[in-house]
Image (cartoon, rainbow, N blue to C red):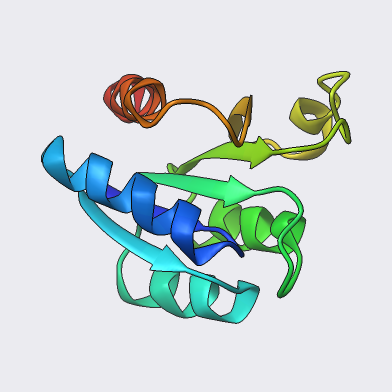
Length: 120
């Protein structure tokens, strides 16, 4: 299973990457919109874990590009604020499958990735 983590905080992205690797997943980490798009042009991920408040670019642009380039790819949005906490992200982003807090334990995130990739 191929996973792309797009997160502006390298330490959190690396923590998730290490945990997902231990679960047998192939994981790439991108810290910007440009890097994420470049990675998607090389390998279509099964799941994207995407920081909603991406510092270097737009998370919505990354999700939109994934929907165009890799239409079967699902997006798990992560955030540490209340923006879109009403669930409206699912109305705006058709490939969104989950919306979670950045503080979600890595083992819970891995379970979600496994679940949504299997549903694909």
